[in-house]
Amino acid sequence: MSVVEGDITRVAVDAVVNAANSALKRGGGVDGAIHAAAGPELQAELDRIGGCPTGACRITRGYRLPAPWIIHAVGPVWRGGTADEDSLLESCYRTAFALARRHGLASLAFPAISTGIYGFPKDRATRIAVAAVLDELSRDGTVTDVRFVCFDAETAGLYRAELAGR
Ligand code: ADP
Image 1 (tube, helix red, strand yellow):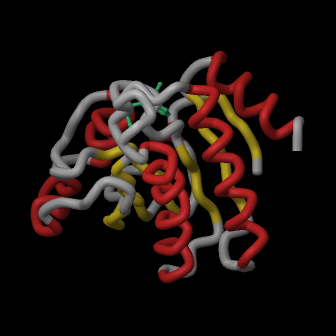
Image 2 (image 1 turned 180 degrees about the vertical axis):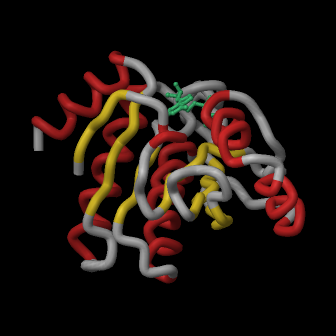
């Protein structure tokens, strides 16, 4: 596991994970950046899939991204902590791993799902992400390289502190 500060659309891994919405329609934040970089074929493939429940993931090609695959994870909108947000967020990381194993993907890059427009508290989301990824890495040898790609220094600092404390 490593923490990198930067733009996930430029990372060369087997799959980048997107923070998508349940309609699988182009949005803002990391989703908008991934659509802009991948090209219009991405929305066409997502339209054929049609949608995805919160806490789950769907996989598409990466098109013009350096990564050949995109795993679209639908994180929960933060509603104050009483709407099962923690387990829905954990489920995003776990189902991304399940898809990666099914497709034989060794390297994954994750953004900080739900912590932008969806408003999930960043420190709480970081603990959930790191714990889920550590546990998944210990279960199976398919995925061997996970990068947490942080768009800002604050997020990178939270991930580095969380990893250092383990
Ligand atoms: P959500 O709707 O799930 O909250 P956002 O895209 O708004 O998703 O934010 C999720 C995280 O992705 C935030 O930490 C945001 O700063 C970050 N982010 C935005 N653009 C990029 C990018 N190009 N690469 C990596 N992370 C990004």
